[in-house]
Image (tube, rainbow, N blue to C red; front, side, top):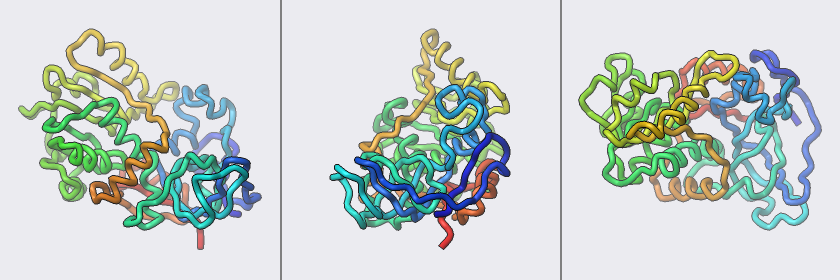
Length: 325
């Protein structure tokens, strides 16, 4: 099969499209014929090995521990290993894996759930990482409640487009922050108000928010706290800087250190990959409360270009990768 391999950390030229052996499902695993994979912000970090803290977290100190990039996928079950009971050959599923930028992948059966019947199979690949991250940011870290005022920073991104829709379905009044070209998209997802960050600073407005979900990184904690209600909650999902060692995670650490001493609740999110949350997303799609926003689809041999497109901030929603027909 064709797969995008990486044997060292570095820029996009470390990614090579090569022929490798098709995986054979082990006991408890399913073999998926991939219809589409999706990009998330972590793909760039795993490609470059930055921040270096990432290497110490089990992803490989000197070289990547996993050779094939990509961690969210949708496709059809091609074969099953011994003991598999949750899925059958021919089932259309989506979920988490290691090695999604390929034509096939094998992973444990409990990493996948059935595709919603009203969603094209390729679009289901957009759900796992960004959708689960948005869900956990709102429900678990943010503890959002009906009637609350919620601000989503980076509302047109992969996590942000899901967060806007999920917050609205949870009964919140949503304000989105994005660039000029993306305001109509964010409004169409259910945001009651959209702030164009190129024209005004949300922290200088009189409005205050019960919950802020920051998916865009960068802004100082002092700026974010100015926009909170006296006992509001900040959840940091994205934290991007050029720091080689920590890469912005120091902002999360500062938030956790400050939080016990202020009235605001300041939290960082490290999402957990749970199939139960995948099922919640599938049910939300089936009910019409959630629709993945797809920016564009790149063929497998253009993964480096897709990563650059996402990293440069051009994407509206999710970027997909499809194996070459």
